Image (cartoon, rainbow, N blue to C red):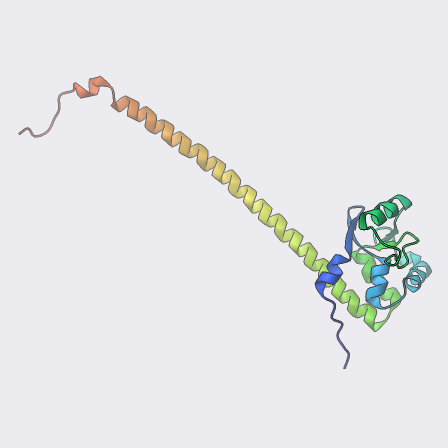
Length: 177
């Protein structure tokens, strides 16, 4: 009986960054989750470069790396292999990485990571549809407001017509007492 890997979604989510307008995970974070050294993970990737096109994995440029390091203010003890620009893996790259590492733990961790990516994508889709519905409601309310104004304008005009003196001077009809 195998032990199921229990990594909270929050831990995986906290290791997903937005770099080059893509949601990615860094090599050191993946290495930690897979239980391997970052050095070994990078070696496996370099041995299988044909499996990692640019939309699966890319290496940070020196500029991106400097910006990223200053943004997260990594201390010397927290650098854990951050002397070199890290590899950034997209969702597809993470999937390919589990194939390259080819261990049971890598497969189980990969399944958890993919589920988190899917959950994030679903949340974004849900938020987008809610925003679209709100916009539609705003448009309807704007139209309703215009229609209500129009009704009040017509009522004002009708009121002005009813208040004319010539209507008061008319001969009244009906039963007289």
